[in-house]
Figure: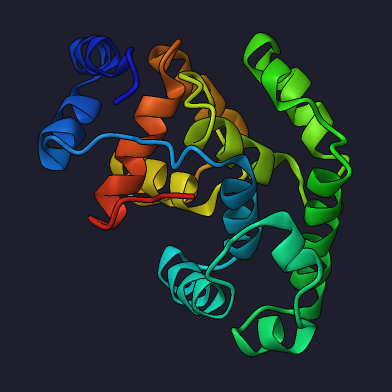
Length: 204
């Protein structure tokens, strides 16, 4: 469990009645990291622009074909096998480019803990197929950063619409303004909004 989790929940519940209800609904479940940067980024690429359920189904097929989820295994793997798991050619290309960055040690992972959220995002989006959303998933699910608000996330948009806007569409600017009351715990708020839509924990 992130060290800030309990404090964040207490503060969010005190300042936002909706968040208080969502937290009661979520129970004792918490955000956790899988501890592997490559797997988190690969899983985020697989999950781009599809539902959590579809992403999980495809991911299970991928790891059945590639049990050792490592950069060399993906980079040198059989493209047709990956395509047969339900991945588009574009996503296979993205996974291979991600693998290349890890193999060539483009990044020094030990420095990420000293870098700001925006600095990490800037670094990660140099990889084909990693945009801001994927980088934000990495910050949430690998780095466990406490204050990430992924405005492009469809689940976040849908949940905010449902709980704060009478189930009517809501734009990113309005979500950003609403989220000011969640500072500095936007990650925790976002995670609970996701859980309200699907009891299966969102994880990358």
